[in-house]
Image 1 (cartoon, rainbow, N blue to C red):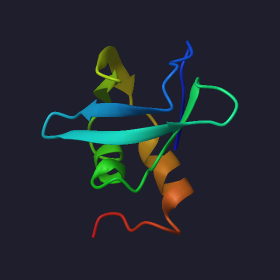
Image 2: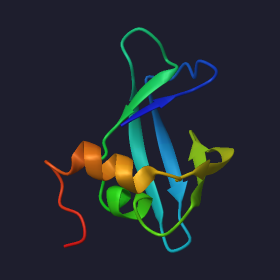
Image 3: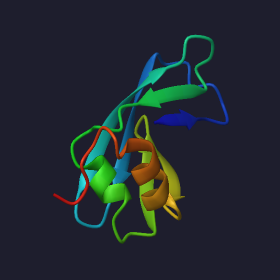
Length: 92
């Protein structure tokens, strides 16, 4: 999973915190080799694919401890199933 920031963060890694109504999931993001605007996040982080493909339409997001606002999850179920169905099991 990739995250692209508007401004360069300057850090080689950042914590992305997804605050769902029933749980909070923290994911470490590692900066790309050429810029600190793009971060690679491990989509296998425990509970993340299921939470993002659930019934919630948006989730509160913090990056590096700073509030970012609500992240829309519209279309996330279809995107996650299409991208990860061969390597992750959903709904078991």
